[in-house]
Length: 182
Figure 1 (tube, one colour):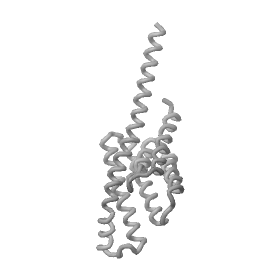
Figure 2 (tube, rainbow, N blue to C red):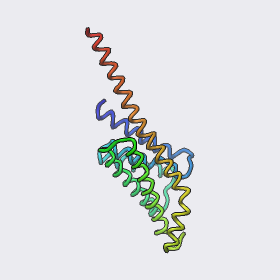
Figure 3 (cartoon, rainbow, N blue to C red):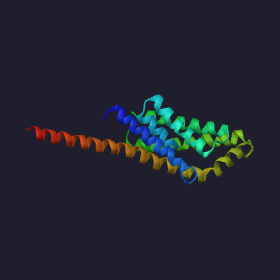
Figure 4 (cartoon, one colour):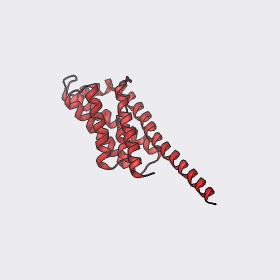
């Protein structure tokens, strides 16, 4: 399979995942971090970071933009997930995908909830306030964690399955050609 075809498959998977943000889903059960991990793993740096962020920006346009401080923290978290995916590309094993997915979930939780605590007056700017902010966000973290794990499994699994089927198909075509040539 050519590199251009692989890039087209990866881009299609990312755009399909991004579109799932537009359908009703549990809070924080989204493909955002999984898209960035996946893009970082399989695309070149420029496209690997651009495509998930652009897909997210377009879906944010339809969903509705929110406070810029939190929005920046979300996009920084997604960029960090891309970096984890880029690092993962040289160590691609199923358990590393799980670890990277968990790491991106934890970093998203910390970065975005810190931004909520730091930029708004919803919580006192004290140790007790940040602990309260983080503890009240735990139900959302569960969904983030589950969403990242499920979508990472789906995105990475779908891509590897497509490559596997393509290789089997090409192998059977080679066998048929060799039989026909005899």
